[in-house]
Each structure stands twice: as structure tokens, then as C-alpha cells.
Image (cartoon, rainbow, N blue to C red; front, side, top):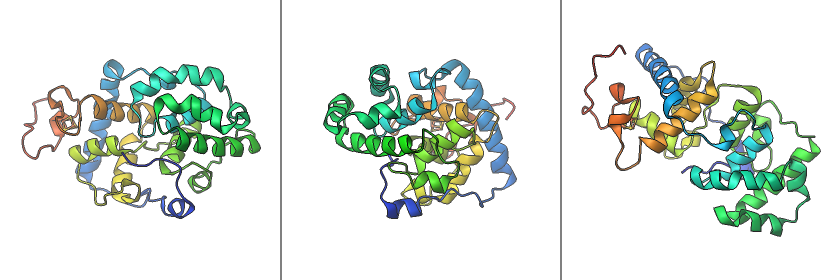
Length: 250
Ligand code: SF4
């Protein structure tokens, strides 16, 4: 899993490899359109339901939720989510609580020291900013505890921009369906970033993102992917040459 937040200033300066100037050939763009349609249709029936995906969930909860989800199973965060936000209803609540107390609250989901430090730093900033996030990626990535992934989440959830929530699991799906990454660290792989951005470019980029994450969690497992039930199987390259395209309209 790629580190999503808490990046150092040096990392933040390098973390804008978003691949916005990269272009792809027509077959790749066509395949991306096809994959997007398949993912959206599949999500309606098979998407996972989590509290942070509810239409009632506000931006504060969604952004904090992304920090809680770092290197942690979604099911673990799912069991913890409601009780956390019953206690911490706003950035002000996180800002006001002593860090040791916050660490104790976070202990059940692990990484409590790192998470508490990140949340406290971001909460302080957000209280100063009266809860308003900047609108540009560069400014977002200059905030404490906000790396490339969390910046994408803010741009997606707050400003409805078609930004990919590209982590290691989403990258695995994209690599298997399209092409391998060029760099080990996906944050700096501008081609993979650009491909992910094209994939989520839709009227509902949030759902495409969630669908990709759910295909990764339910089907595209690292060792033994469940390809037979995967909506992307007809045009997936993994493992090379073993997926016979069906007769369906592609
Ligand atoms: S067909 Fe298999 S390898 Fe390809 S995306 Fe689906 S689960 Fe992953």
C-alpha cells in the first residue's frame, strides 16, 4: 500500500506527478471508456456500502475517513467510523482534544500515533482556515498531513473534480487491465496517474473511484484474483493471453 499522507516537505514538493500532460492512443482511450461504463453498471449491484459513502456524509467526515483508511482494512474502519464521529463532530473537536486522548481513541484501528499526529496537525490548520480547503493541488499538498492521495480526495469530494483515489489496490487493477507501472512508487508514475485520471473522467467520478476500489478488494486480489466474477475480465490483460474476449459488445 502506498503511503497516502503525512508526507515530508521534500516529498510534498515532488508529489505532483499527476500526469496531466500525457496523452494516450485511441484504443487505450476507447478501452478506458468501456471500463468506466462497466464499472459504473457493476457498482450499482455490487458496490460496497460504507458509512463514508453515504450521501449524508459531509466533507469533514470524508476527508478524516480517508486518513483513517490509510493502510487499514475498510471493514475495520467501517466498524469504527460512527463512534469516532459521534465523539469528534468537527475539526474543532479534534483540535481541542489532548493528543494522548486522541491516540487512545484511535488505538483499535492501529497506527494511532501517526494518525493522531496527522489529524491534530490538519485540524489546527482547518480551524484557522474556518474549515475551507484550498482549491488547488499545490496548495492542498502544502497542508500538514495532506499528500497526493488526500489532496485528490479533497478535490474529488469538495470540488467534484475527476481525481483518482489512486492507491496500491487501484493501481493493481489498472496495471492488469491496461499496462504495468513504470515506477515502483505510484505517486511519481505520471503515466499511471494520467491513466487513472482518464478512467475516472465522468459525470460521476466518485462512483468510478469507488467501483475501482471495490473491484480491487472483491475481485482483483493480489495473489488469486477472482476474474470470473470481474466486470473488467473481457478486456483485461492479466495474466497475459488467458482471458478470451467474449462476444459481448466491447
Ligand atoms: S479480470 Fe482478474 S486480473 Fe483483471 S481486473 Fe478483473 S480480477 Fe483483476
